[in-house]
Structures are given as C-alpha cells and as structure tokens.
Length: 567
Image (cartoon, rainbow, N blue to C red):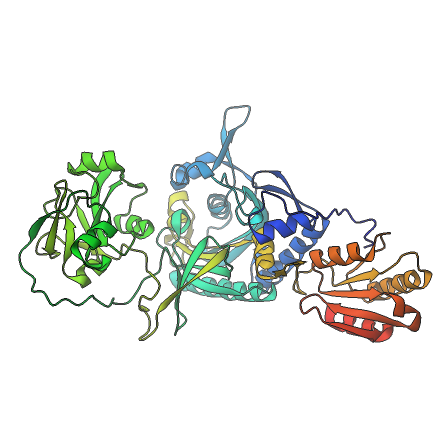
C-alpha cells in the first residue's frame, strides 16, 4: 500500500477522552475513530490488525476441531426468559421491539441461540461431540464505557460452544479449547496468565478460567503465588491459613466498653490500641430482599461474588445507614453479631483469629473478648472475603500471594446442563434414554486484544506491533520524494518485497522526513527501511522499531533479511 492512498490521518495531540495508553495511541495513529461512547469505527490499519487476530483464532480453533458458523445478532427475548437470564443479565442487555411489538435483544452472548440451534439439529449421541464457533459483533449497554476498546458497548468477540454426551467428553472439550487459547495468545505475542475465575451469570457453578493479559490499566486484579503456578481472579482467589496476631491477655467474658463516636475500624483499633485484625466488623446485606449479617476481620473486605455464590441468590445489596437501622435497630458503626436476630455469616479468618472486638448493638458501645461460636453463632461459616497481598498460597507451602493487574482477553466455562435443561437440548444415548447435552462455552475478546497488545507494546513515541499482528511487515520511508534515486529505489524495493508476499507500506507522501519518521514510530510497524543519501551507493538504513537498532545495509541484504523475517 502506498501511504499517499491510505485512508489515514494521524493526530499530533492526545485526545482528551483517552485515559489508557492503548486508547490514546490507537486514536492518534488512525487505527480507530469514535462514533459514540463505547462505539468505534475501525480504519484500514486497525482492521488489518483485527483480521490478523481473527486469522490466528480461526487457525487454532479449526486445528482443535471446532467449526465456524454465524448466528443472528437479533435474538428473541423469549429465549432469555426461557433460560432464566432475562432479569439476571440486567440493564446491560439492550432490548428493542419490532413493528409487531415483539421484543428482541442485541446479542451480548449466544448461549440461548446456540442451544436452540443444536437442539433442533441433533437428537442422537452419534452426532456428539460437536464444537461450533463464530466471530461476531456483540452489544452490551455498559454503564460506563471507558478505556477505548477495553470497555465498549459494541465489540468483536469469538464465542465457541461445545456439546458432549457426558462429563468426560466435556472435560476433554474444555482441555482442547484451553490449549487452543494458549496457542492463540502466545501467537498474538501477549504476556498473559491463566487464572481461576467466577462464572457469573453465564456459567453458574461450572469450572471456569480467565486468560489475563498483564497490564497496569487492567480492571481485574490477579492474585498469584510467588512460588507455584496458582493464580486466580480476586473474585475467586483463596488463601491458606492466616498468621494470627498473638496475645498475652487471658480471654475472659465479653465486656461492654463505652466508645463515644468511635465508629470506623481505624477509630476502634486506635481506641483499643490494637491491630485491625482484632476488629470483627459486621456488615448488613439484603439477599433477595432479606437481611443478613456478614462478619469479617477489620483488615479484610467482603467478597460479594463469593457471598452470592454461597447464598445462591441473584440480588445482593450492601445496606445503607437507613436499611441497617431497619434491620438491626442499631446505627452504623456499632452493629455486632452478638445477639443479632438476623442470620449471621462468619468468615473463616474470623474463626482463625479466635477472639476480637465487635460492635455492641448499642450506640457508642463495643464489646471486647468476643469469641465466635461462644458469644455468637458461627454455624454459617465460609470464605467470604477478598484475599490480600502477603496471604499464604492455598496450593503450596511457603508461597505468598502477589497482586497484578490484568485485562481479560479470554474466558472458558464448563456450563454443564445449565442451558440444555432450561431450553430442552436433549439427545438419545446408546441405550435409547433421553439425556441433556453437556455444554461448554469459550470466549475471546478479539477487538480487546488490540488494546491489550498496545498496552504491553508501546513507548513514548508510539506503538510497537509484534510481527504476527502488525498491519504491515515493513515500512519503506524515502527521505525525499523529490530525489529521483531515492524514489526509484523505494519503488523497486516495494515491488520486489510484494512479489515475495511481504506486506509493505511505502510512505510516498511529499512530507518532511521528521513527519514521516514520527508517523512511522507512532504506527509501530516492526521494521523501517529508510532510503536516504546512501541510496545512491546501494545502501539503506534498517531500523527495528522495538529495539531502535539501526544498521546500514546493502539493498540486497536488507531485502533478504525482510523476506526471512516475514516468513
């Protein structure tokens, strides 16, 4: 492609709305343009990268035995009501009605559609297993679209679905897709970790793993062991046993202490001259509109995903001051588990600590020497907290949890019979008995990969594309288009490289050399060939974008090196 003909305008200034490096650079380099909040057009350079990601995805999925299809974006909401997700999915599901007043949704995902399709096509175990996938635009009405392609309302996604006749078959399908994902993200040049995760409204209780591209801008927190391979999303992460603050005081009976205006964990710890570990804070929630109390250590935070999964509820809301008083009769800051008339859930770390300080359920008072199980019920106990850095690893001895930020680029789920039972996707087994199909689901954020790659591969001058995804393999930059020798050599290089199947961008614009070099750095093509004053002697400058290394090479050697690199 000759750059004078390329539909490309680069921007000198960073757009004011661009918070993330990837958002900034993709806009400045002319890869994308915003139409509305969270909605983007892909310009030629951005589209070329997307197509290369798609190609890698297709090659690896078809190697794994998956078959590509294409399903409708427009989905009847009756299917969502039948699966039970219509109300659960919430306002992110974009709903609309046709002229006959029939309601549809713009597909954020396709579990309902694929299950309906397969149930109408497969009735015998002889046609199982099967894995189907598509690459398609999805729609989610995000509350706050941000970070460009990282959190959009319209995005390109690969979603695959496996159907098996038994659990063993699902385990194998899951393993196959898991390995395919490893190959996809490695070929894309991503630095990523695989973590245990929560399935949310998609998978229910099935196994699930996320593929996380490491990046400081990532919205997900990863807890990873310093010694072994354990890693999990913060929503799912667990810890081993905690080290407990030692005490020399003898544990006696509960004592009520007057604590005027001492409400927060920090204030209570300071008042009693102790650590936050010794404070047992009690938070009031409503689960499906019924109040309950959760007790965690003062230095810990409640993990609402774990809590919802334990309770098996769809709606969980932290009570505000007014609802706290309505549920307990106690102002916030002084609620404690002793004597509460609502269900009390106790985090395991509280039990490990053994003794602590709690609210006394009277304004301006706290209890000390409170022992769970002795002074308040601890029958409902579990892991209800977020891990913190430094917690011990649950899988090995001696390892500690460390935190990283990550961008979710892929997610694999074991769905089981969640959708096949609800939507009637059944088959006859070898004995003629009717069984529900066993399903798996596998997603990749295709457009999100662009942003993740840029977050991991850029410098102060612009983007640095890995060879596998670069819009072009080489950027030819003649210093002066008015110089006949430079122009002739640039055109000759362009033709020779293209004849060998190399993707080439030739900057044939009548611009100053500085403008060309700045644009080249911004766009981030892996190799730049500068045709300058030495061209008359048959030499060009070979520049690697990643290392900024420069070499003066004979033209034939430069051609050979590029052809070898491109293939």
